[in-house]
Length: 317
Ligand SMILES: NC(=O)c1ccc[n+]([C@@H]2O[C@H](COP(=O)([O-])OP(=O)(O)OC[C@H]3O[C@@H](n4cnc5c(N)ncnc54)[C@H](O)[C@@H]3O)[C@@H](O)[C@H]2O)c1
Image (tube, rainbow, N blue to C red):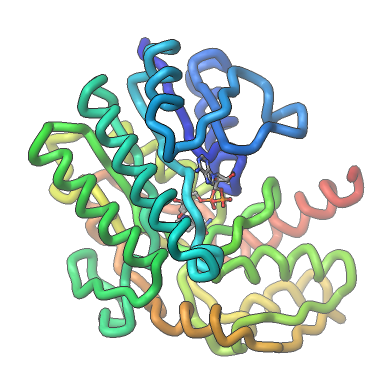
């Protein structure tokens, strides 16, 4: 069997996707890579290679060395960081993806590319945002995500590269910290609720966004890569979602477990503007129809699981 390479593997998604793929295929079948070196023991359980995704030779060498057949390309700058460093974001997000697709074309690899609700924009319909709709984002992150979606479609139609992808909403997890996105509050709030029973949120109380618990995000990526290609009408950029809430609603759910939890607000204009340009909720019926996408976690289950696992993690650290 040809092996699987994950770029940006030490990030929020990669930390859990690597484990899930190794459980499925075996430790040696999955090569983790990042521009950082692994720290904790579970991260180094299996091959790890240093790869800067903007340097083609580094990625090429690893693809040849291990006979890689599938690349989950997670290396990226996230929305808030990309606004701070737009030039670096272009190089990493677009330059990295272009190199991955070129290598995939030459070495006949399949590619997974995670897009985002950031690929929409201020004039996208805000509620139940359709799969195929207006995409005019006004952030560097969004620009790289729309262009990435289109580039993946192009490499499939022009060169036959089996590129597939999802538009993730904000992702919530207790394993690795989030990497500088606009929805990071929905992770930080759990840490602060457990540690201090209070949290100051950088988005306003009524900012409604789609979110997803990491086990569902990992399952979505793996399910899509195993989907029957004959059923895929879209291939790339599938809308996927599982929960939808405002900071106020999340705080209310946390209060069911920590009754004296208090939320305050100190709105960050940059991240609020990014959130305001994103949909309130998205329609994932194409993913449900074309590859049977179905999330497992709702807000109640996710909150209970996050609090339980994060308490254990913080106790042991
Ligand atoms: N986490 C979310 O909420 C979310 C939502 C939508 C889409 N996504 C997308 O999913 C992907 C992974 O997201 P994540 O949350 O794991 O991000 P993250 O920031 O936690 O991890 C990204 C990883 O990429 C690495 N990296 C940065 N520059 C690199 C380079 N030049 N070469 C190689 N590696 C490099 C970083 O060291 C980091 O470990 C990204 O494409 C992101 O846009 C994430």
